Length: 507
Image (cartoon, rainbow, N blue to C red; front, top):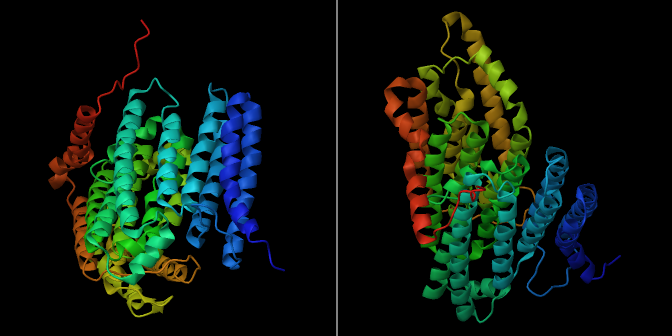
């Protein structure tokens, strides 16, 4: 039986409406009532997101709404974000028990999610700009939940500045594209690009869009606020790292038809994504705080994901986004158990990896992944350089400890288990290409070897750190400080937009 065309559109819009309703109603209630309203609205939104994805997979015709369009990619991400938000909301109701301002927290949480859902439905420049700006504006209330913490205020201010710069770039991109195409609709833009190569105006629009995503995704050099928001409550960190900061990847996938025609924009994404992944990956190795390690890990993963989009590996970028969101939400919400785990490790510290394993691990992993370069998946061949890059990324799973010869059997078991894990991860990545994401890859074979060389450099630094840690003591101090990039960025931000980021004195 055919469904009315407006029904799928209404179902796709329902998560945003449910979250907007709780954002309006929660501030007028006390904490228990606000949380009950949240649970009802979140459950409704989750069921609607699931129903929207099912309708998209079934190919049910959807009536267009002004400025909005339900897409298969957006439906997958909407289900992910709402599912994580439902879990985070339940965690928050216990985590914040007894705290003042819980109704405002619920309202801000609902407002952020309403804006995220609207962004995932955006099919017009104005809707995209407004929704993404709203995400940042409402998120400020969550980041400053503890206004007496100076670094929370500083992080919120730095994010506000990055967001406003990104808004300006998006407005410029929209104006250029609108003037060239004659409409702000994305559908008109895709059809215009199919008719011929992009004009200089559209190329400039693509560059502005790529730069805006860099600012919104906390890549170099504006990554510092992502580390300093650790002053916010843990559920805010979980929401930010699992469902907000990675929206830039969704936008890049949405604008794949434009980016594929502008090599300069793709190189910008690859370059800054690689630089962020390298720096954040090295800094993460020197940090002790669990939450800070997770934050630097997010910066590295965002750089990696943006690089994947610049390389045209959109399916892998979407798989990366989904997997990273699930992992980071779990990691932040379970961070309270990190102390016990750290004590257990201190009682029996792991042996350092042997020098032979540092050299042999990539060589052993490469043949396992080499088949990916030969197997066309979903009509797109997996590039050879991506197999080599993954071999370097997953090589640490094959390291074996520097032990006596009598422990050779244990080392062999470890290597075999690592190879099995690499094979499973490779198979999962390949299987992901068969899932109906509504994404089409366009690998860039000119930028791929550059990314591979950068990954080899990162692996060499990691291996050297493991083999000769004392020889790199001076470098470790620089790495621990993040190579002082954020210090310079913070000074520039405060000069550009001065603000008071320490709480006012109560004397």
